[in-house]
Length: 86
Image (cartoon, rainbow, N blue to C red):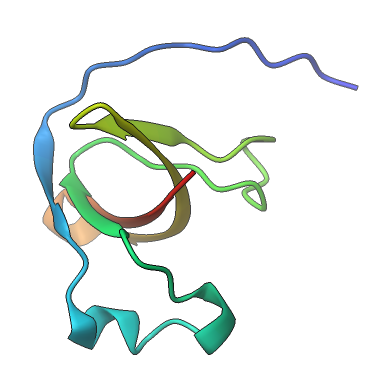
């Protein structure tokens, strides 16, 4: 079993509350109040990624969020992530 150490990074990007329209793309059981949408040039990792064993956490305005979905737009140079409040 590989041991993963916590690392704190300070990437730049844009964070905004997830819109009602964006929430429609999630199954009902995954729609949560307090979700955020993240636009960043950094890759965001999920638990099911083969390159990572643990989903990324994001701290925004003093609150902790877990990344639950990430759409990589490499052709455009950024990632769109969706995170739910822990």
